[in-house]
Image (cartoon, rainbow over all chains, first blue to last red; front, side, top):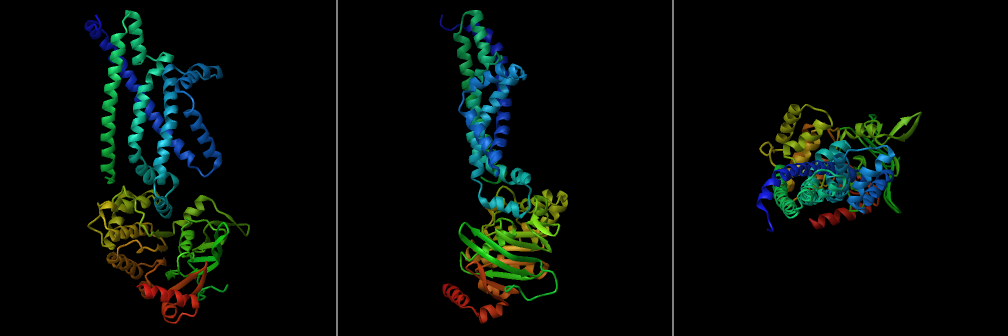
Length: 221
Length: 266
């Protein structure tokens, strides 16, 4: 028999539990990436080349090396320098850093599109750099880039199986274990694929709703 | 000190002292000397490229200067006096002095994601640390003063150009500036909306004791409103004086040419 329903029902609860971890990794990883990316984008705008240039270099470096290697580096190599992290922490850090650099490019485009007059009005009103960013620039720069950020959220989600390389018990790792224990891979791997498909579609929908909500709230519709 | 204004004994509110501004080899302002007394209303006119907008932008610290000193209310704007010498100031000093100046822009530059009311509350709350309730009360008063008491909850995109510019004026006033700068504030407006903005400025002139410096193409308004008119040409003040004199009997050939060209166009 090609598809075993009995086996399917048996492993479904186990995979469902693992999917919670995958969702958790995705949300935490993306929160990290979104925050870190914004920080990188702002640092890169600095007038001081001592800040802007190293930031740009870091972004290019991270984007030009594979995520899998970064995960392995943080988990297997950093302990050699006295930094030992748990698999989950190392994985989150790698995802956050990697996607943070992609997000920073998205933010950069958003920030660059803010008209000069907005900066000048902020200066004329004597706003501090902090309040200029927090109250004037960022609220205008983010809504237009939400779709692009949403794409990276989905991309990050689809790359969480890479964490199976450092034995984080997310969906893929769980499916592999189930497969090897029962000598049946069809059901677990297919279910994992289905899960990713459904979650991606739902997320895309939510991102669109969120974008609409942001525009309505800001009077920018 | 050839360009000094009628020498009052009182300290000027704004003083440009040998101020020079250039972009590479192109000199925008050449050793500008200009004193503006407290409460004085000065109109700056001149052809495009004469450096008139740059004067306002330097005072608002939107442009750096290449030489000279700008004094505001007796203190240097971008410098501090240390051991009898002027050295470049830090951000704290700059912001303290800058707080005395407000500016209204040609293209309004309202914050599009904030209502009219919020536009007028943002800086008082974050910069002056004013309690929200007080800031809101004041914003309401100012918006009522510019005739927009009914539009408090409107976003800039829901307002006409003239209304947006009036919000921008209220927003600048909310910071209680001693000096107000108006940079071609009616140039981006449809002709029928110019009057409402000029009326608001007239009202400010009569009700508030604010020093005003405006770059304008509205010669009629400059004539009626300003205490003094400065005609800029090629990075210098080519001629200045009371409006009646400058418009009625200009001495400088360039002024005459400019005024007749402007009159022809209208």
